[in-house]
Length: 530
Image 1: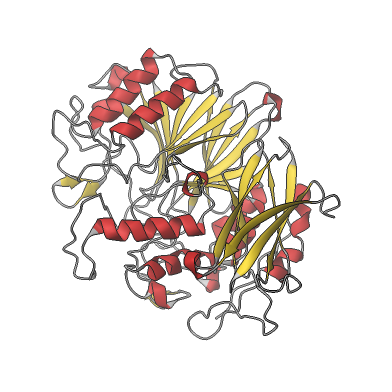
Image 2: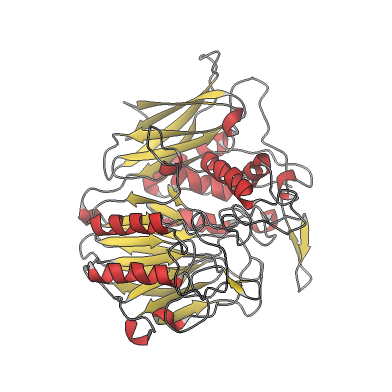
């Protein structure tokens, strides 16, 4: 079983450096009925067969990631041109087994609003004359002028429900569609892996067709050890579409539950017989470490005294946009029926809520995207009695985790914070909800929109029920009638946000795999509510 090499399709004109060179530097050797690790050259020179990726790009900075096949020193060169004339060197870390041979280098002092070409070279730490073949990538820094505009994509839910890399359909095809749209960045809204999702060699579909998966040892059981979590993150990088996309489009990444296991919360003790480690906090610590090793996330690579290692952060993308990346997993209380009348922990935790209020109030961006890994008004059950997200199906006044969201929405209204938009994934369908106080049990808030898109490479599910507490109206939805449709039976979904630099208008497009725009909504700047 084999997959095409990255770079097999031409890149857009402004990112033409990837022609050919990406295919040469990021090829993986796949063989047999399963999948072998990358084929290592006998020369002894370090190789970067897993590709490169950039993350948390701002107007003057960004992070670049690579994985080596052996101990190596990471060197990154950046240039304004594909020729790498007048290249600037950025010296990265020594990569070794302690980080599963992954490394991330911070790039600072970059010019705003410019295409940055970079190449990563891995050098033998004992012999600097022995260097591996450079691996190429590119990204565009955030603009420092409003008129330049911003365009990005978002989605989530990758390799879930047993639907892994299927070479018969070309692997994770939606990534190639997204690459061709050439966005400024990609917001990955969580469930970046399914650490609790086993990938079988084949699955028989209801119509008799056979879905074939690329398989690895780490995907043959639920992840418990650090190495098993690392193997889950490596799995997605086996797909040629993912590697080509990563080399061209920088990402802003957050996590949700499946990076650890389904519907987890801090302090949980498992009764799942598949797990020998029952303490979710132990599993979450291992998963968090692997997440930070495999994604370039600024707050997970923070260095220095007093710098907290955390998932939530603000990525400032020029005058038009601030992205508030939320962590609705690490600080939440236990899943429950959600009917308590007093709840200071909620889904964000008290400290993260205070942080979010401060950052929203301080933001001067025209648009403030709240990147949530779970929806606000969609009911997501956890078993027969408990609930996994914010909503719990009671249409009355806020209770449980709704109390914290009500506090945040009230703050936004009373501080007259303009341009807030909620983006999420998680529920494996795509939809647009408008929230308005005249329809709500709780009315002390300004109207706002929530847009849902996903899955990107997982099973599709029916639309979730709505909870009327904050007055949602489902303006658009596309979802199957039955659960867990494979990507051969249902298209995958991703969203697009396009902010015009002249008018400041923000356009949201909900897209389906195959190029179809299912729904479009234009929002006006400078308003507290829409």
